Amino acid sequence: MAKTGRTATPAGQRADARLNRERIVAAAREVFAEDGPDASLNEIARRAGVGPGTLYRHFPNRRALAAAVVVERVEILVAHADRLLATDVTDVTDAAHARGSVHAPDAAHVAAHAGAADPAAAAAAAAADAALVEWFRAFLAHARLHQGTAVAAMAEESADGEADGLGVDCHRLITDAAAALLARAQRTGAARPDVASDDLVQLVVGIALSAGLGGDDEQPERLLALVLDGVRGR
Amino acid sequence: MAKTGRTATPAGQRADARLNRERIVAAAREVFAEDGPDASLNEIARRAGVGPGTLYRHFPNRRALAAAVVVERVEILVAHADRLLATDVTDVTDAAHARGSVHAPDAAHVAAHAGAADPAAAAAAAAADAALVEWFRAFLAHARLHQGTAVAAMAEESADGEADGLGVDCHRLITDAAAALLARAQRTGAARPDVASDDLVQLVVGIALSAGLGGDDEQPERLLALVLDGVRGR
DNA sequence: ATAAGATACGGAGAACCTCTCCGTTTGGCT
DNA sequence: AGCCAAACGGAGAGGTTCTCCGTATCTTAT
Image (cartoon, rainbow over all chains, first blue to last red):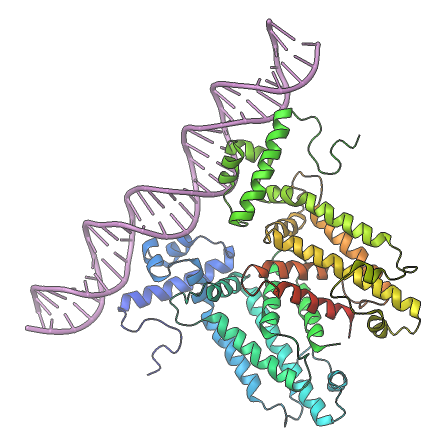
């Protein structure tokens, strides 16, 4: 049991195949990091010590490979979201500060926007907001790390209705996590009720994609902060 | 005088060269529209009825060609911005409604955020806001039309410090236009003073880039509205 | 231990792309 | 008309994606 977890590596696989698969993904991780999203797949095969044919049998296209590279990181993000969601926001003492989120405004501020006089509700809103901010910062960091490769790959993946043979739809995992966090923030009044989680995800994806084009290193963080201000409402 | 305006087509050019240049740009416009940003330059040359060599002499790389394709549209955008800036916002009657911007909140609303009780100031803020919204909607539409090709090309262009031989730095033109509009909005209190115009442009670029990845057709508009809400302040 | 058969490997190669080089053509000037 | 700088176009080098198939290797059954 728990042979491979969710990270789908077809069960009845020959040992060498599994090994090669891992080698390829490892090489891809390196090469993508070095050469960016358009890195040569040949080069990846070369560095993995396999022929191009082998690479292409394991991963039918660039997207599938990119998805495989990030799938574990996506799972980390999902776990992160789960952890944040597990801390019940209604009986939290000061989770907001414990989490140490830089951008979260203080409870009073958030509460003011939520129109809540109740200090408990204010704390809940602040905690929900802090969690939302923390997670999206993590998501953005992840997306930037992979220079948009992964993000683009994931987005296209479910748009095309292909599962990339991975068995896991990364995009769905991400959007589900975001949806849960946003829904809670909305319930506590920390976020505008008319914001769609898919829109928020898409926006952060956009930030990540545009990050590679210019601007300073802190720009993406600023943009995210700006967007989240918008989400908090007027 | 005014032979070619700003659109740089070197003056002392042979007639056939100029003709070919135009043919290439026209073909590029078509092909980019059909096949997206990664369209084959060979195909463009073929469709323009010239050899690859000719294409590459006119445009040293894909970016230069993409820039040439959009340069006129960029100039339209700049003109649009100039027009919007020309209407003096302080003695405007109800330019906001005259422009018919869908997303602009009413004067009272904007004014409330600006903390202004003065109705004249409120009107000025509303007008400045409406202009900002209108222009960014136009910019987004432009960016989407070119499926991000142009946007990416432009952003890289000035990041690399290259002028692409066009003589016009499209990116600079755009950011300058945005800066002027935003500055006015900030002066009237319609926009947060701590938002940088480059950030705003980058964000819209991000929206355009991510627009191609999925989501519905109205999503980009929603995202822009969300961002602009953030810009208006808390 | 070994043989049989399914599985996976790898590299040759087809098709395509970007970009360069250079012999040839052609427009513009005198 | 004649000259020549300017411009053309296509062959081709070098790289990329992706496929095909003969060969090698793992696995299972005997």
